[in-house]
Image (tube, rainbow, N blue to C red; front, side):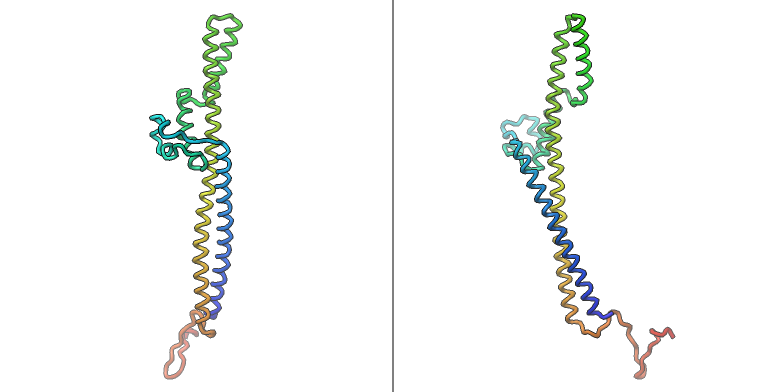
Amino acid sequence: MKRRTLDVVFSVGGIALAGLLLVLGLVMSGNANFAKGYVKNQLSQQNITFPTRDALTAEEQKSACLVNFAGLPLTTGKQAECYANDFIGLHVKSVADGQTYADLGAPQSALRAKVATALTANDPALPALQKQLADVTTQRETLFKGETLRGLLLTSFGFSVFGVKGGQVATVAYIVAALLALLSIAGFGHAIKTPKDKAFAAPELRHVNGKSDDKQLTGV
């Protein structure tokens, strides 16, 4: 094969691959921008604002992100993660000594049964049981709201991560596409400078007494 032909083939292939990577980069950039804008739009509609620094409790001040985002509106995925884990998560743990909404289901059902029995039997312990049931019900409702909001915020954070990863892929695709394009241009330049009749990896013939020694070709 002619060396010039080989240069042209590789250069054309490089340009084609660079074009594909450019398209990939544009698609991933579009996805990244969509994810970023969508997350910001959805979080902004919640009108959540981080507590100011002077309003943070001693326990909350141990969180670096709560201190950094103090007083700011919640509009990004990283802020959503911080608010969900370090603010809501902290307060949810203090509602029922670390128990969750699901954990309180059995105690609530048991208290309802006791209240029903006490009501039928005219048990003097009825007021105390009703108070216990009311307390557990309040705790469970609080946990349900807190855990639901926490889950929604973490979902927004997870969606934003896909956007960040998409942006990183786009950056890599742009860099590789640019390198391929430069190498392809260099290949075209080399093809222009290469003589038309120059072959690629042509065998060298030795000359002995003015005659060609073609042992390499014939194997003799």
